[in-house]
Image (spheres, rainbow, N blue to C red):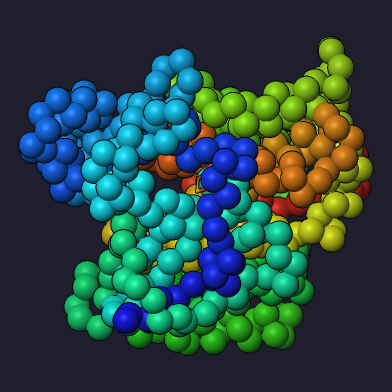
Amino acid sequence: MPKVLFPDYMLTFRCIGNECEDSCCKNLEIPVNRDTYLKYKRLEDREFSERLVQGMEVLEASKRRSDQYAVIKLDEATGHCTFLENGLCSIQMKLGESCLSKVCASYPRRSNQVDDTFETSALLSCPEAARLALLNPEGMSFTYVEAEQPITIGARMTTKLPSGIPYAKYFWDIRTFAVEMLQNRSYSLSHRVMQLAVLAVALDESCAKGKVDQIPHIIQRFRDQLDGGGEIAKTETFPTDLHFQFKFLNALLLLLISAKVSNNDKYMECLDQYIDGIQKAGDGFSEQELVRYYGECRRNYYDPFMAEHEYIFENYLVNQLFSSAFPYDTELKLFTKVFYMGVIYGLLRMQLIGMAACHERLTADMIIQLIYSFIRNFEHNQNFKKVLLEQCEAGNIRTLGHLSLLVMESDAMEDSR
Ligand code: SF4
C-alpha cells in the first residue's frame, strides 16, 4: 500500500449524508473526466447513455483537460445534479460506484501526488469537512498513513527528475517553511500572510535569476529575521489603509457576484447578511463615514471573536497551501499564489465583518457557512481565479504593497481618523 499524507482531520472525516445542510449534488459545478465521459457515451444501454450525454455539457476546447472534460448540467429549478433521483444518484444505482466520474467518486477528497507519496485533503466546500478542518484550536497537523491509493485528481509532480519547475528540488524546504510561517502565532494572521508573500517574492526573484540553489539560504535568512526581530517581523514594515481595503474589496466582491450565473442559497444568505450589516450604517453616509462605521464593526464584533478564534482562518490557509500542493504550479509565480490566497482571505474577512454587524455578534457557525459556501459559489468555477486576478490587474493591484493594503489590519486609531 502506498503512503498517503493526510491532515489529521481527514482521519475522522465521514460524509454525514442526509444530515448535511448542503448536499454536494446541489449548485456545484461537477466536472466529468474524459475517460468517464467516453465510457458513458459508449454504454451498451443506449437509452441511458443518451440520457447521460444529454445531461452533460462538454467544455470548450480551450478549457478541456483530461480530468475536466465536461460538466454535469444542474436542474434549473432546484439546482440539483440532473442525475439525482429521490435523493439518490441514478448513475451509481444503474452502473455502480466504479462508473462514477472521478470527482463524484472522491468528493470532497482531493489528492495530489508528490514523487511516490500521495497527499489527500478535503475541499472545504463540504461543510462537514470545513467544520473538522477549521474548528481545531490546536492547528492543523499531518500524518502519514498506509492506505489504498487515492484517486488522484489534483497535481502530480516530482522533486527528483528535471521537471520544468525551477524550485522542485527544494519543494519540501519551501512547503514546510510556508506552513511553519502560517502557524507561527507570535504574529497576527494578516502579518503571517504578508511574511509569506515577501518570501514568495524572494523565491521568485532567485528562480528568475537562475539562482535556485540560493533557496535554502533565503529560507534561513527569513528564519533569522523572524527569530531576531528583523524587518519582516515588524508590523510597521507593512502598510495599511482601511479605506482602500474596504473600497477595493467591496467593489471586487460586487464584480465577482455580477459575473456569476448560478448562486448557492447558503452563500446568498451570507451575502444578504453582509449587505444588511453594511447598510446599517444608514443612508446618506459619506464614503469616509462608511469606512469608519466598518472599522467600528470590526473592532466591536470581529476582533473580539477573532482574538480567540484566529486559528479558524489559520487552518483555512494551511489547508489551502496543502491542498494546492504549494509551492507547485505550472505557470503562476509563487507570489501570485500567495496574492490570490491573501485576496480571498481579505474578501472573507470583509464579509464576516458585515455579517457580524448584521447580527451584532460573530460565531464559528457563521464563519463555517461563509467559508464553505463561498468556495462552493465561486472557487469551484474553473474561471474564478482567472477572473479575480484579471480584476486585480485591471485595477492595477498586483504588488506586495497592494497586497499589504488589502490584507493588513490597521489599528483602532487609524480607523477612527
Ligand atoms: S457536502 Fe460533504 S457531508 Fe455533505 S453530502 Fe456532500 S460529502 Fe457528505
